[in-house]
Length: 354
Image 1 (tube, one colour):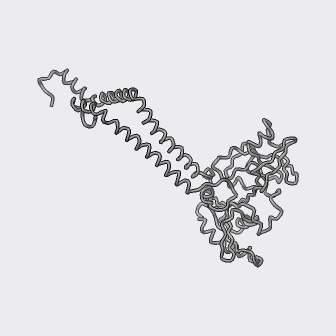
Image 2 (tube, one colour):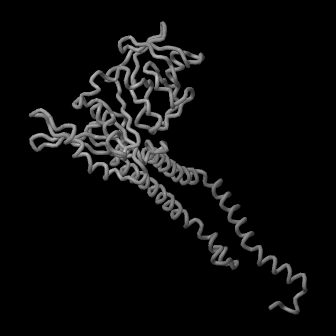
Image 3 (cartoon, one colour):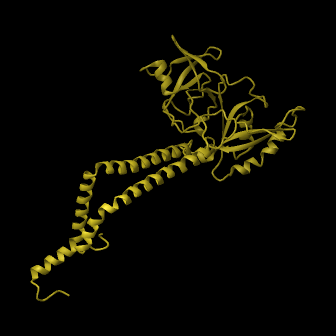
């Protein structure tokens, strides 16, 4: 209740002072903080730099962890793509999974099981390939053979060319942007020819890949049709040299298809010669390849979930240490601020503002 003996102007000024007291105190705190930071430059540098370095290290480590967890997830159908693995058992000893299968397995799976929408085979050359364009000659790695349905499965965009027809011609070749610049400079590579040391064959450029994200376990520089040089034993059920990827429908779990693999093996490997190991197939999700291939994997650079757990723990440990260091330094300085706090209490500052 207002004081009836207090002038009206004084009442208004008292009300405004009460209303804006927190704002005034906040401005005062900011001024005091700025003056203290300038006055104690060494303390300020150590305290802020320590916390900033800790936060920066934590952020960089978590960025690395996030990148590792994102491998192959840029493909639109990533959750439905699986790689076929092969294991062998002989004399009670089971081998580690192989990432390669025989050439006929993937087409047979697509033909016999409606759960398989698309099957794609890939094969990387075991050695470097000599690629030439007139006088320009280089030994190249990451030279792949692939089925024409490659772009129906994977989202590898093309800068130039039509992904639906780029691998239809047996003598076609798709190259990376780096290869296009290396062999053709500023010229348009489309329709031009490259000679590869695969029986001195000439290939016509029908596509140029866009930059493939670094978080892809497949990083091809050259792709040619599977039929052209991928091997002469495409009907050999024991020639294990080919990566096989399957696309399944959204409502079909991989486990249901895996249950049918024993019948598939019995059908196609019933006449296995004596002494040959027993074969088994299994499916590995595409998104698990980078971090969950704890076996002899020849496709791409692999990571490890163990390292990710260690790096994540390290990131939070560094951040906690930085915070503790910041609080210790602030506590050590609190004695020098005791007089300031006492003065504020003396003039009647509210506890919430203090």
